[in-house]
Each structure stands twice: as structure tokens, then as C-alpha cells.
Image (cartoon, rainbow, N blue to C red; front, side):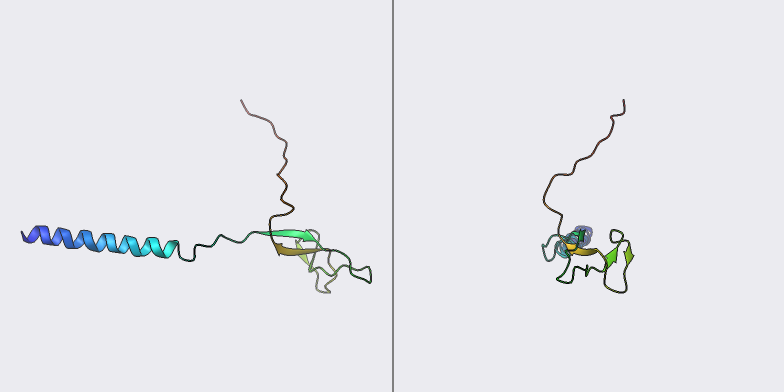
Length: 87
């Protein structure tokens, strides 16, 4: 009888721990943020005010880059690609 009590206690502890971990993994319920490298429009003085140049690769210390990292996934268009099928 004592063996059944020990097994029941271990099973209960294991299920309780699994429940706590599952609740912690889905805490918040928010989706991850996606970012893109977007081209910046020119200001009134006809200069760019972005933080990066060369497509968000190299940071511009003067603040005159043509690109900026912003949250979003582009213009909402489907991605187009070309490739070949391997047999």
C-alpha cells in the first residue's frame, strides 16, 4: 500500500511541474515582433535621416543614412523567388 502512495505522490508532482512549465512557456500569449530594413524618405532639406546605410548593414554615425530598422513585414506582398526543382 505504501508503494502506491509513493507512486501517486511522484506522479502528482510530475504532472504539477509539467503544468507550471507549460503555463510559463505560453505566458503573455503575444506574437513575436518582426522587423524589416526600410528605406527612409527625404526630409524638407532633401537629406535622408536614417540610421543605417548600405541596407541596414553599416551604421551611419552622422544620422544621414538611407535606411532604418522598423517593426513590420514590408508592404504585405507575397515573396517571389525563382529556383529549380531537383529530381
